[in-house]
Length: 344
Image (tube, rainbow, N blue to C red; front, side):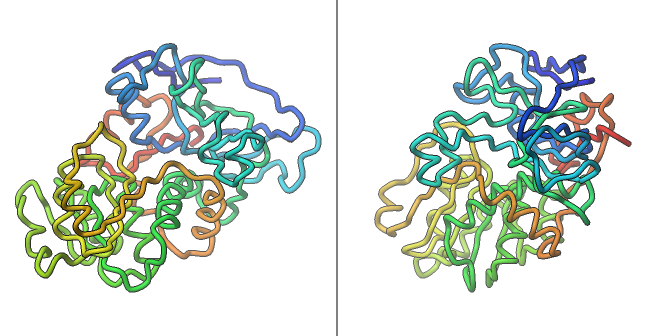
């Protein structure tokens, strides 16, 4: 089978691997769609991010869907031919965090396409994968592209769960890449009263407006756009910070209401923050990392038409054009979510 393998910065290759066989409790899946994530782009463009670096060739990809081809022994609830969204979250279920229900902090996590441990955890951008049946959410009624959006949607649902009740809240979203766009959808579905989004490109802001943002601001052309929200100690109850840029978070502090919540989703470098101003406003800074149980919720929400992710899938390219797909996904003036088609 073919697989998309990163060897280093700007060194992406399509290589051949053996088709795996399912064991007990496992299924063989013929991959259908794979979404290119920001972490995939970091590996492709920079060879890693922060202290996480590629130390050996690694198959990329963790936003995937496919069709069940074969079942190993003791598998129930799935059948050959089922379209499934495949969760990349593979906790051990035995460590102290798993036993506490915090599976996303598993001490032995095997998250697809991650260079955090060594040897690296190989990803899912290949024509076939073997997955634990517990990873598979039946996605009947969805397209393969929609099913592959379950992973990034799960990231935002986890953040929304940590943020608390969204009903009637005024929400600011900084950064309108795929996660920021999905934050708009989730905030709207959660009953937010007002959603304001910021970014630096007209393309992403137009999409944010189309999927539910009430107001958008281009901070590249109008860097002081948020100043109007700073009156009376601030306007927003909740910030979804999706850019990972320190200036975005620091710039949002003056417009947060006292007691507001900052949900940090964007992963960039370390930040210097206006801690004194945050303290004086009694703001709560909450991190949000990956997900687990939210994956099945994400699939169910899409199946129930609670939200529509299809406008965010802006391009789909075949496997043999993987490099072009990664280059396109890196261009935020053209792409929100670029996906790879493993079957036509």
